Amino acid sequence: MVELTGSSSDTFYCHSCGGLINRNSAFCTWCGVRMLPASPPQTPQPASLQPEPVQVAPQPLSVPPPYAPSSFPPHDVDFTPPRHSGIGIASCIIACVAFVSLIATSVSCIITIDQDLDPTGVGLFALLSIGLLLIGVSIGIIGVVQSNRKKLFAVIGLIANTLMLLPILTILVVGLLATP
Image (tube, rainbow, N blue to C red; front, side, top):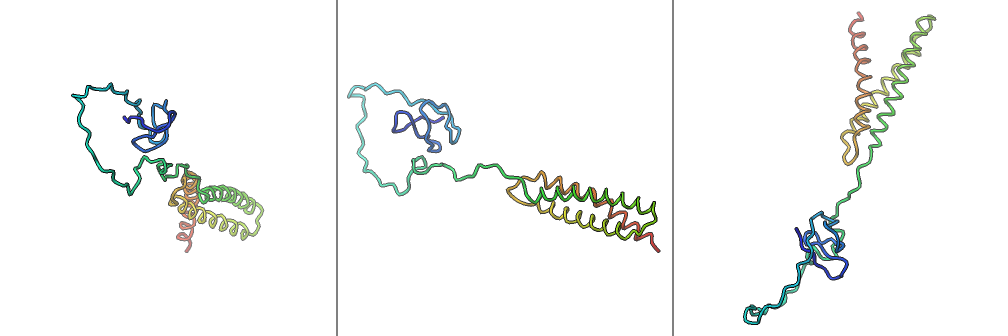
């Protein structure tokens, strides 16, 4: 607990951090230390019980004390919350676009098989979807390792892109291995 001291009748400086606080505050608004009211004035003692004053030469201060008013704000810490990662948001958007692209690829594949059309367009569309997913995974990894940013969208984008990419790559590898 810290005792309140100060020069003004309405404000005081906290002995813990030097923050300027209101006289009626129960806690320091800067560091949260509980404040005690200033000690009551002492009654004068008889001259025979008072100690003799000691003469001390004043020493110049080279550094102001930490509770000096010139040192405010007491902390040089930025208290703003971290923002969402733009790269992570891009990874989520790519996952959504790739999902729609995969759905369109599946539908066009079914239509192509039913109507005996050339499957080249479907193959190119599937490769485009795989490329989007690879980019989404890469951007998701970058968003996860990015410092001073929230990682929610980066993690969601990374998981979504990976979950769509793994089955497609598995099917491609199995197809390549099965071909003579």
